[in-house]
Image (cartoon, rainbow over all chains, first blue to last red; front, side, top):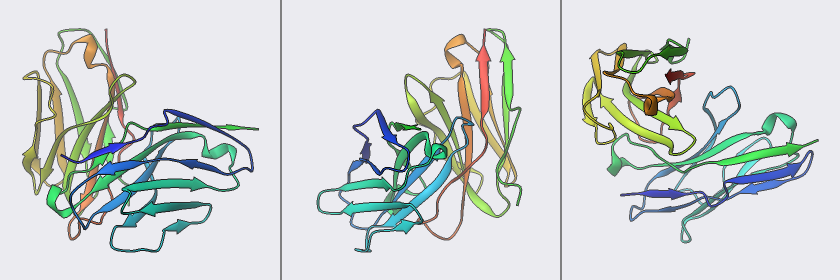
Length: 115
Length: 115
């Protein structure tokens, strides 16, 4: 079965600084999608960004970007110019056509933004 | 679009009572997922449906848990009898048809407390 690992249970960043959250995954598939979700204190899960495995170009959404290293099976999230509203739990997730519609989630990284 | 709707948002019950959680997926979505989130175990997939058919219920903890999807616009997760260790936030999510590249859209969650 696919596994998604987030090795940083907690991270902190100074406001306006940049932080990188790590995610690695284990798969034998060649085509798949990777996602980062944000869960603020409200508990609502919000999609932040997603990356197609067949695309070499790293996905970017405003202040959020990824560093996708397919060979290393690594998918890190970079948050630039961190804001207080970025404080949340961040989950990495994996999905492939051979897993049907099932998503595999990491255990999450709790991000604190220091004013 | 109203998004995924879950009810109730909060539920407090006593051990031994039956609990029913409800979910209305986004119209047109053909996949529905039930997750449980706790501090100890993180985000766990309990069961998911494709076109109203349960595909994988291996995450359902035990026979006290059951889930149904009688039609494309409604699903229930039932716990009978409930126990204090069932206390958690239960999320429902739906995903559209057409591509495994699609993300999941989460509801706001039901916070369950079993006393």
